[in-house]
Image (cartoon, rainbow, N blue to C red; front, side, top):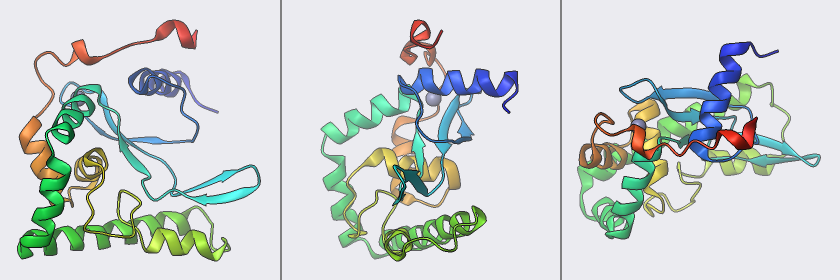
Length: 185
Ligand SMILES: [Zn+2]
């Protein structure tokens, strides 16, 4: 049973997300002022009697970073990083090593949950997809996922460069919070 602090944290996370959370999670990292920044769920979801793989099990909830990352995506940075992964060998090697780490972590977390007897396709997807859930590892797809991996585990150079671009949440962080308290009373 969750204590009072956990409830408050749950509520804060839902306010940041702008909706109820549908799966259990833990806060994985925090912004400079202590607000939850990334959350981590389980890499598998059990829904309507079916196990579903959840390869992007860590995600960004900071509203400032989410907005600024969306602006970078609008500026064409998804394509920029996809091209960089194809053309820059050192960058690609570092990135692929980070994805390998992430997959190992994901499978370890799966076993931790006592899910050794899952349907084969769940383990198959979780063993063969990037942080964005893509089978094509060099297809960047979503900068939010890469940044979330970097903030949570530090092993994603795409996320690192995105972070360097948008910086820490310091001044004016609050103005990005869209609290929807009424919804959760
Ligand atoms: Zn933030």
